[in-house]
Length: 233
Image (cartoon, rainbow, N blue to C red; front, side, top):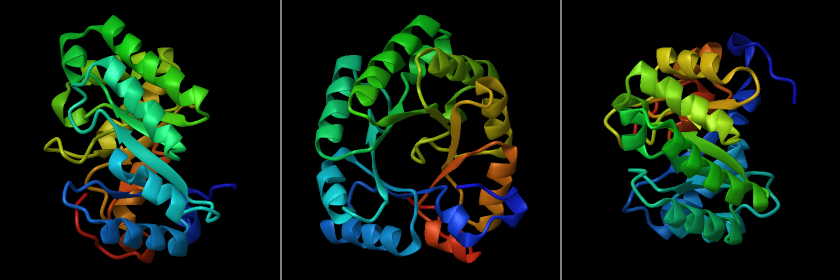
């Protein structure tokens, strides 16, 4: 669909930019199904959950047009690449359409571009083989600007589809400044997902103005209603 300028986005257009998210470790099946029902009602872009719940979400969303998104290497990014690849393939087999992976944060901090490219490339290949898109989570609160740029450049080289700010579990969330830096670095072709602490329509519009094309939020309903939601994943 054609997207209006940020300030003029309708509730329906905004909903189509939101990954409705539930990543709490203690989420129950009833919690997951409630989020799926909400996603159907508000027509969010996807429901984003931990790998354990992918098959449940995929089944619940069948025929709705809402995508199923799984996080990988979550929330630390410290799993070996082979483990992330296995997680990715399993999530896709269970019905995931989108994969949100956490980078090897330590490699970004020490400036190891080759390690970042190798890790992201392997997951990108597994995702694309399964016709899923890959979003690469930087965990921006742990990186300086040079490391953020490096991780974005590595994501472009590795043929990822999106870069994403945060897990929501790393002690910080999306900022307008980080979104703008990420957009500047990846250019116009990759998506940029702002995630973590996006709680209101105002927050969402500010991220979109800075260059975000997707939003990760547990407060999706409040955002589309123009209310203030809780900052909780």
